[in-house]
Structures are given as C-alpha cells and as structure tokens.
Amino acid sequence: MPVTCIVGLQWGDEAKGKIVDLLTEHFDIVVRYQGGSNAGHTVVTGGQKFKLSLVPSGIFRPEVQCVIANGVVINPATLVKEIDDLRQRGVTVGKNLLISDRAHVIFPWHIEEDRLLDQQCGGEAIGTTQRGIGPCYRDKVGRAHAIRLGDLYRPGLRERIEHIARIKQRILQSMDGQTTISLDPAEIFAEYTQYAERLEEFVGDTTTYLLDSVEAGKRLLFEGAQGALLDVDHGTFPYVTSSNSSGVGVSAGSGVPGRYVTKVLGIVKAYNTRVGGGPFPTEQANEIGQHIRDRGNEYGTVTRRPRRCGWFDAVAARYTTRLSGVDSLAVMLLDVLSELPELKICVAYELDGRRTINFPSQMDDLRRVTPIYETLPGWQEDICQVRRMADLPVNARRYLERISQLLGRPVEMVSVGPDREETIFV
Ligand code: GDP
Ligand code: IMO
Ligand code: MG
Image 1 (cartoon, rainbow, N blue to C red):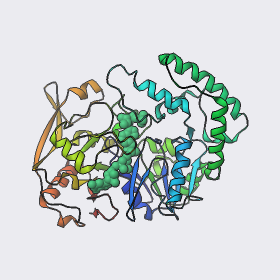
Image 2: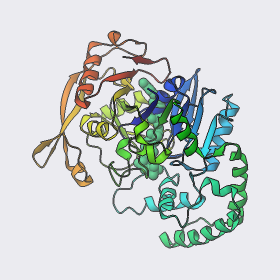
Image 3: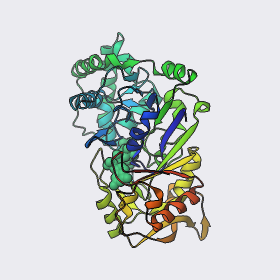
Image 4: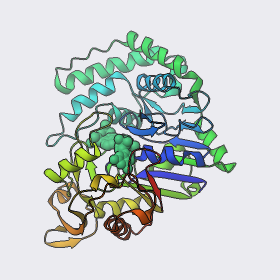
C-alpha cells in the first residue's frame, strides 16, 4: 500500500523497528514523525544489532529516503552520535537522510527539568526516560522558550540561548532549590553551533518534500515511536509520553494529511510490557512475568530498566486498534511464550461489579479494574525456525486467531525472533 503507517498498539517496544526495516524495501521514503530519543528501535540485520533512537529504521537500505519530520524532538548530540556510529559500522548516512528545520531542539535545561519534574509528580512517578522529551514538547507548545532546528542557522542564536538559559536557570533553581546544573550560555552556544554544522547537510523543509512526494505517488512508510497507550491525548494519562504516539499523530507530526494514508499496520507483542509507572491491569509481577522478561530479554532499549511484563490485554489493544485506524496486525515475539503450560488473554474488565470491554479514560478506574481472562493451552515447541503459519503448533495458531478475533483485524505477520528472517507472512 502506497502510504502505510506502523503504529505500536501497547506501551511501546512492540518491535516496530524490526517491522519497519523488514518493510522498507517496498517503500521510497521512511518517516519518523513524533517522539525523540526516548525511542529505542532495534534492528537486527546481517548478524548485526543496531539500536536507533532518532534515525528512521529504514536507514539500512541506502536507496530509501529517510525523513525526521517536524513532530520529532531532537537532541542533536544524540543524533550526531547515532549518525557517526552508523557510518562507522558501514551504514550509508548522507543524502538519504532529511531532517525537518521545524523540529524542536532539546537543550540541557530540558533534561534537567525532566529529571526534577519526574520526582515531583506527587504519587507514582511517570518514570520518564529522562531524555528531556516532555519539557521540550512543553516549550514547543509554550513557544516563548523554544528553539527549532532551523533557528540554529539563523542570526541571533547566541542571544536567544543567553536569554532562555537565564530564565531556565531561575526556573530550575525554583523547582527544588538544589539543582546541580549551572547553565553556561556561551558553552551551550559553542556546543550547539558545532552540532548545527555537523547536521547542516541534512536539514530542510520536510513538509514540502513529503507533500510533493505523496502528490507524486511516492510510497511512504511512517514509523511510529512509543505506543498508542502512551499517547498524550488518548493514552493512560498522565503515565504517557508527550506526543501523539497513536495513529492520530501522523498528520500533525509530518504535515501529510490523513487522507493520504492507505494502510495502518498495528504492531503488538504477543503479551504486554510497560517501562516506567502507571496502571497495568494484566501485569504479572511473579514467575510468569519473569519467564517473559527472561525469554524476551525485556529490558529497556534506552534506559536498560527491566520492563514490567504481563498477559495480553485485548481490551486495551482493541481500543488502540480502533483509535489508530488499524487495518491489520503484526504479532511480535510469539516465541517468548513457548513452554508456558497455559496462556491467558484479558478479554474484558470488571469495574465496580460490571463487565466492560471499554478502556477506561480515567487512571483511577484503570487501577481498579479486575481483568477477566480467557485461558488457552500453551505449546512446548521452540518456534523460532517456523516460517509458515501451517507449521506453527496448533495452540499457537489458536492463540493468534483469538487475538485477531478480539481485535477484529486479521493477523498479517507473526514474528518468532529478532532477525529479519524470523518472520511468518500470513
Ligand atoms: P521498538 O521500540 O518497538 O522498535 O522495539 P524494541 O527494539 O525496543 O524492542 C523489541 C525487542 O525485541 C528488540 O530487542 C528486538 O530485537 C526483539 N525482537 C523483535 N522481534 C522479536 C521476536 O519475534 N522474538 C524475539 N524473541 N525478540 C524479538
Ligand atoms: P519505543 O519507540 C517504551 C515511556 C517511558 C515513560 C513514559 C514517558 O522504543 O517504543 P518520556 O521519556 O517519553 O517522557 O517517558 O513513556 N516511554 C517508552 N516506553 N518504549 C518507548 O519508545 C518509550 N518512550 C517513552 O518509559 O513511562
Ligand atoms: Mg523500544
């Protein structure tokens, strides 16, 4: 399909990177449109493992144009390092990468604000990745203290950094009176001028480029970061990220109107995980959760925090499937569930004595729900070598069928290992 979106339907880390890399050969352009270096997308190719946070996962095919669009927030230090690392490992990064001059830039004060704010939630911390994502998006919306990538190439940058740094120093001090950071505007200006020089060859107007491209019938692949349950408007607020990480974010984050999108592929793990705070009805803080964490190597790509693990939540995934306008599903990490004697899928919640399949909008309600499970028999076989649906154990097929039924969408792909090859096309 000419314009396809890849959207994670859970709390992130659904293995979007693998799917984007796998599908890239069918597209002309791959676009990141929200999030920033809170994302960690893993691609395993040619026996090498790559972790990407800002560069689109399409970068491994040099003939494909990669775009970091306006909706992404960019830490230039991270981006420069990521580009250098990729080049060092033989990956082409040059004209095949275009970065929006409208994208907002993360500064040291954002990272410090992120750290201080997360300790001041009053109650359970959000547990952010501490990459300055929330504070940068807040400044974007607030406008007064924002700097966009294009501003790095305009006159007056030094004065602008001095002005904002002065204000931020006061804000940071008043936040807890004991911030250790001392913002040196001259140093920050010098550092960011260097980044700007390094990135200049990539920077341009991606909105016009993408509009020209869709009108010319080019094939676009949108690479969502995070997952729909972390969407700032529709997710498990306030335990969310600061961008629209469900399917609704594509237009605002790229400038490409939704009417051009011809297909949305929803990515789910065969179970649920979450990093950071917030309610998680099907969480298994027990040996089952540990089994999943061990087999799935469920540790954060960015922060290495152990991911919280639990049973597949079909109530949540049905909600995000509808929210993101999903056409079909890719079910990832199915191999991780091998050897469990039985598997559970949450098919409804009980809230205040009533059964519901609607996902609550209020977090205190979500904390109070009791998951209603359906139990399915597991399979003992290692399935990493399986490449055809027909060769999967019958119980694995039944499990996939039930997920498909509950979400009301066909399963198009099944992943049984991190490698490109370890994939079943249905
Ligand atoms: P993303 O943020 O959605 O791109 O996902 P992450 O890269 O953060 O996490 C997915 C992890 O699962 C990565 O380490 C992948 O290499 C790995 N992975 C992807 N697909 C599979 C699979 O089918 N089975 C297993 N065992 N691991 C997988
Ligand atoms: P990818 O793209 C999983 C989570 C954080 C925290 C919350 C807010 O790899 O799927 P933030 O730093 O964004 O303000 O943190 O969101 N989070 C992710 N969890 N995968 C991600 O990205 C995430 N990006 C943010 O753990 O709970
Ligand atoms: Mg990730």
